[in-house]
Amino acid sequence: MRIGVLTGGGDCPGLNAVIRAVVRKGVGVYGHEFVGFRDGWKGPLENITMPLGIADVRGILPRGGTILGSSRTNPFKVEDSASGASGIDRIRENLAANSVDALIAIGGEDTLGVATRLHELGVHVIGVPKTIDNDLNATDFTFGFDTAVNIAMEAIDRLHTTAESHHRALIVEVMGRHAGWIALHAGMAGGANVILIPEQPFSLDRVCAYVESRFESHYAPILVVAEGATPDGGEAAVLEKGLDAFGHVRLGGIGEWLAAQIEQRTGKEARTTVLGHIQRGGTPSAFDRVLATRFGLNAVDAAHDGDWGKMVALRGTDIVRVPLAEATTELKIVDPNRYAEAEVFFG
Ligand code: F6P
Image 1 (cartoon, protein in one colour):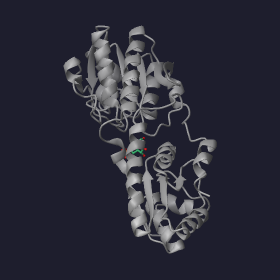
Image 2 (cartoon, protein in one colour):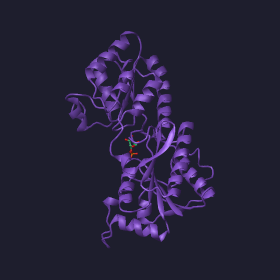
Image 3 (cartoon, rainbow, N blue to C red):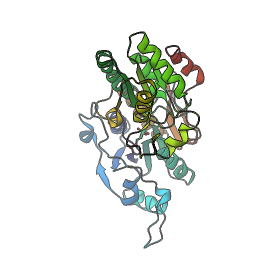
Image 4 (spheres, rainbow, N blue to C red):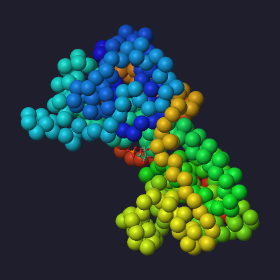
């Protein structure tokens, strides 16, 4: 069998470990052939390919990013204006032109959503879940999350000493538009005093009161805020418009806004560190390398078995196959009980 492999959506430490495992087992154990499609769904859409043999995956296990490149292209949203061919027609043509029988798509909600629709249209697809946000419902963990949490934790560790030295409130803004998993885990691991997540709108009054009380006990507070966290009440509308409390265009995100609010309301100095894409770059942790490798091995097994329309997932310590559709129906958000555990430090 000849199998195409692609990586879509935001990059994530561990993507190369998946690709390596797929190719090593697929070629070495099953004797299949592989072709890489470049830049997510753009590859099969525009017929941009690269060789993907054993030699091409040598040495990539510790490398961040993806040797295949990535994009957020959605073939269901494009049409060739000259020929009128839909994105799906073009994908079918290019799969046939490359003699590709099946696709292994490694991606998050959007990439796997496309994979699900392609499967429903009869294309042979297997999915592998990926996101640093850990918010895919069908799997207990996604690779990339552990690495991102470790990067954020190290940043928090370093911020403790400078917060204490300067008697400042220090805010760390981490990724997570819809789910606060990175904030929750990095905040707990790093001993943050306040953790703010998108699932639970926060009371600015309560945060400021806590900051003041913490300073009264002679300690500088560390606050971790997910990029999608919002204050409850009226301030949320201000944030949505991208304006600050004075009606000015906000250059930073929620972290900068919070620092300004804390300074105004408490009179204490506050600073924000936005970790941004640092959380997505660089070498994967051991946990992510192992999980990504196991996902890759199991994905190629599923393809070999012709078990189309499935996604590999972690359940407990086992890798299982679940219907692709399950991966994208609902986001996995932070449970209030998990958040309550972290709130113990915010009293
Ligand atoms: O979905 C992963 C993610 O890292 C989000 O947490 C973040 O909001 C987003 O990607 C950033 O995407 P981009 O790299 O396109 O700015």
